[in-house]
Length: 155
Image 1 (tube, rainbow, N blue to C red):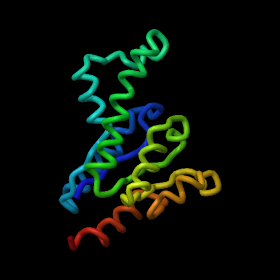
Image 2 (cartoon, rainbow, N blue to C red):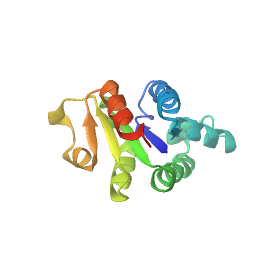
Image 3 (cartoon, helix red, strand yellow):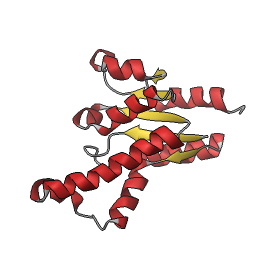
Image 4 (spheres, one colour):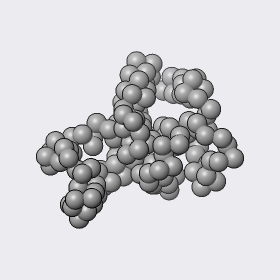
């Protein structure tokens, strides 16, 4: 099984790397599941295209910026649609400032890929669209882990 780890990157302090690293380690240890971590795949793109300063391009060279970010979008959506068995999404305030997580969740829903949403904002502020795309909604990572163990440990 392969989990795609969706959540804020562009506006997250560490691009959301820490929670993804911890979740990837847990999934491998407890369920022997692999992960697709978009922080890692984006870093590979940065290295491949020598785009270490691509964020600066947003203001200095918008066309170049968009061309590069489109490569990341294409990679992320391909990973969600064609390579993932389920999506784990950390939904917090940082997600609200971006767009990628919204798109990943919507595409996974469209392809009938289960979406396990860890919601960290008040439920009344959670988008009805995102809420309805989600297969299950959890209040924290511990609830999600318990569910994943119950659901996947026998497979």
